[in-house]
Image 1 (cartoon, helix red, strand yellow):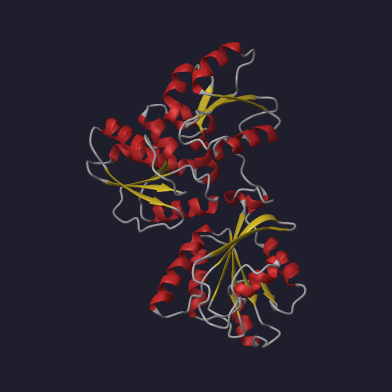
Image 2: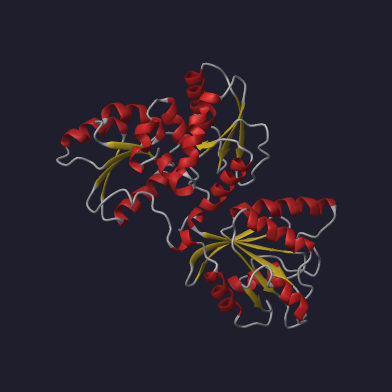
Length: 400
């Protein structure tokens, strides 16, 4: 459980007004003092994250947010932070007290609906004061997934919560998508081209490579892991034809030249474009590159923060490839981490492989981009498109 990547966990957001007991509720569910509990309104400021094993659901990450009804200048910043969390949530928990729903909670519910996030309502502090029947009936206009509890005195709080969460679990969490499982058959051989360079963590492979290997093994197939300089030799030594060759994007051009046309190729980034986002949307976004004009603004999104290195894929490789492809310069801007900036004015968004981000966050970003009619794609697809091999790189996924 401890080693399960955060990106593969169910993300549960905890929302509500100040002092309705959000932090107390989280502490009761996790049975740990994760969040500071105080009678002083606004104690929680930034988002508090906690990863635990929630039986029988599995590994989850809780996101405890700040109250949404603080009218001070600092409160506005807290509200902004809270609203930024919503697109990351697989499910949401809205905590209220006997006062029922106000405009604050209804604003949150509207946001949940905007991003297609299933939610439940928790009526906290029921041991202090019961919610009036008329206010309870109003709740039923929004959801029938409601529990009444006390973070302090309800010994069955965890069972109640888990039972209600199970009712609203997204289908893709119950039946998670596979990286390659639906494209390979038992005992197929998959070659993984994994360059060892400055971006590779010392002593280990990067996360997409590790997860792809695990997925291949889970589907009772074989993985041959090599560097690009050994690819041609490996193909000659093999007695069986590989089902697929998956490469790091930086070796795409070399792999395309070496691997015969009757063997499919793709990249780890494209695999994760499908796993974490929407491949068809990314494909359309990639083909919008030819509609760009000189000095158009392009936003590059990186899920994780890191120091820029020589020949960095986002800041050097992709800009060089696009300039060579188009014959002119574009204006690139960068954003790292979870905060999603205003995207007005951009002509294209290029997302990283999102190995450190949960699928819901990427889908939410796609939703926002689609609403504003801004094309969105990802690193691996842009690279393969600029190299003229995109059609081959997505052939195995039957893309049109």
